[in-house]
Length: 630
Image (cartoon, rainbow, N blue to C red; front, side, top):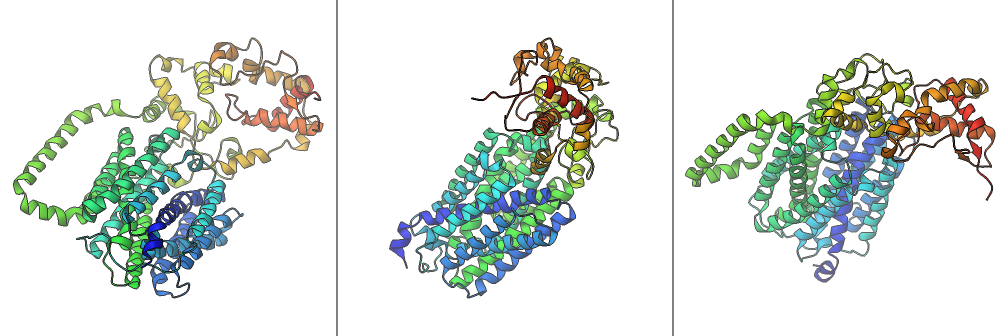
């Protein structure tokens, strides 16, 4: 055995486990899906592409232990990292359906080679001293990195580049290794291989279903992953639970960890049935995930008995092929088709995981078991009688706001469906898939548009603009026929409605932002612009904020994130001296049409290009001037 070297290089095992988890979670199951959506590969195409990844993962997981190529474990790991990193970089290219299928297969194949090879030879990278702790630390750090706010909220392109960079780091971490350690289980277990396979499959199934359900519901996502506080909390919970899992595996055994993980995940899935309990679910879910994730790595490499490296590799292959890939696919399918995890499925999974231990405990502790059952029944009765009667008061602010939206009849005038292949996509934002809409309860698509579509309004309007609009719609949005809803702010309903509208941000906005940046005034429209007409339009649509006596400016002056420019004070828009007149015109038109992101200034997406051009021409002639030379 390489006892000396392995002892000194235990950090390598931490790095390899962390990198593999980050690649799978932040890229393969997250960024890649968003990238496909931005390429227009959704619904049936998306399922086909993700199926290709599963096929690659399952196939390589099963055949890798039997292939003699790259006999040295370090060489195999480097090959896996190269394949995975190359696949991540390939997603930055403009892919079609065929090339997406190929890249997806490569992602699965690279992960299959990585996971099986790493599990087979993991003791060589963790060393003899506290290998379970190093697996737990690596897993926890991996989840912490995934929840690092700048990475979690980055664009798919940045996440793909980060995944490729981590693959390079993983390959570097394998340098200098020559031969593996002896085959020996470093922790004892009473769990058979078949039962372990069944338990891990059920846990991955629950985890994948819950993840997709949360991602697909704005209300649930707002209570779990929206905002830096939630992300940091999730990351630290993952890290704590992963280290605790390593300790529990050594002290209490695999069966205890699997049952504990199921208890937390099962409860989280049941809590997600009621959005008012999402805060509690957001605590149980990451702890349960990290508990079983550490065991998923440690079982085939450090716990399962094996007489040879070949047997260890075969067990790892079956664990990751069946539990990892098949369990994940089944969970995603459940989330897509049902939108929730049925309680009966949670019960069935619990029987599969905990039944052998429960039967043994019941036979030896009958009176304690009876007393526990009576307490559970009493608690259930209290929950139904007392807690259920106060469900309405426990709803989240977003959920309450959605009910206000429904009760006030907003659906009568506003749709929540960006129609594909139409001007909607530039005006209102990215298109939601039919499956995403079907998961709403009830769907709020709407069939009339006396007002603008609101599917992505959280990306287009600030809370202050929405509040000012509710108070005086016609002042904020010229010619609006919407009545005032100022009365909602006499109690919490107004704030609840604002929270709900701000949550309507949809999915990946990369393609939409790119379309905004590419937009420019058509030359024929610019030539027909009328400055006199522009002056009248400015007074109607812009004067309320940009005139000295503008009503919106006066009423909400202290609330603006950045006070709107007062166009009565002289030169107000700095434009580069090097810009041509056409470039300055287009810069102003772009601000007029799409607003200024990060401020309270909205766009005027609904105005025809002719009116945008006229407003911009008037501004160019009367307000905007080139910046002075310095």
